[in-house]
Length: 409
Image 1 (cartoon, one colour):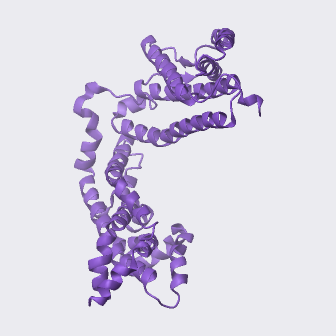
Image 2 (cartoon, helix red, strand yellow; image 1 turned 90 degrees about the horizontal axis):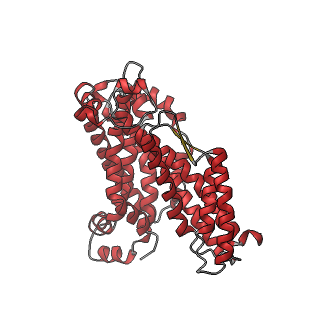
Image 3 (tube, one colour; image 1 turned 60 degrees about the vertical axis):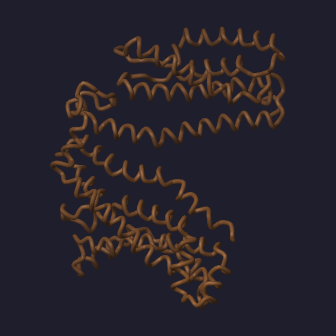
């Protein structure tokens, strides 16, 4: 372990691993952006990153001769690896030289610039435990950012780019996600056809109406329920508070058949009334759980003062508790809205009439061999972007509401 804490061991190791990560990332990014077929060559990428991880160790001049000598020897090894195995990025035969040059420059910059930050605390000689752990944590943090960003960004990018492709381009090369800007407004043909031929405007309005009404119904029941659990004294209060989320221990797929049979017998299928009866069942428990924690954090003295002034319990809730709970109500409303907007299983099971489809049910209708794939991707973009914009715009309010009740008083 002590040997690993030498900077001239840890630096090249971190640099080599980061070189491999960046070679993979740049290959994917350039391939998606240009349609060229690039692939990472791992051994040269590791050798290049290891060399940079050594020569850029910020030792402040200490051990300069030893570092230059070792860096020169390692440079010979790197050149030999390049000669035998090629450069860190390789392209297909039809890939242009200009694309390859841009990819190589991006790869070099993407390896070098983050390494300057990762290796900042690491000396060329023996590193302290703190310096060693700091460098490793910086590397893992950078890798985490890249990895989880890729998990989110790549599927979204593929979805958006596919929705902007023509059927001919998709058949010619399904893995080409570059844009043909010469098509002009024809890029958005799939979106025009969804709203003109598939009634996606109606689906948007239906989903918005269902989501807003689900928020209203959820708050109507969860606010007094959470207040009762948080403030009132009654038998079974503690057990009720702890068992609110037990409903989530039963998978919805288990309840699907009983719900389908019951709604069919009551003639509530193909009805927005039926949807508005079942959606709050899935959202009220989590709203109760979130709000009761916040209500417990509010100072009870303020409510007691209102009761002493002659207000009823309902008036106290309306005039005192709810105004103080606006951050929590906003976060719960946003969370419930997202659940209702994205819900698919119940809508798919209960809605067969296209005139009453929610947006998720409408997108599922596009999953057919008779409908071009770019229409399905366009529908997915329409379903995703509005809720993404709402979440990103109101994220700070949601975070504030979720944490505001953690400190009492």
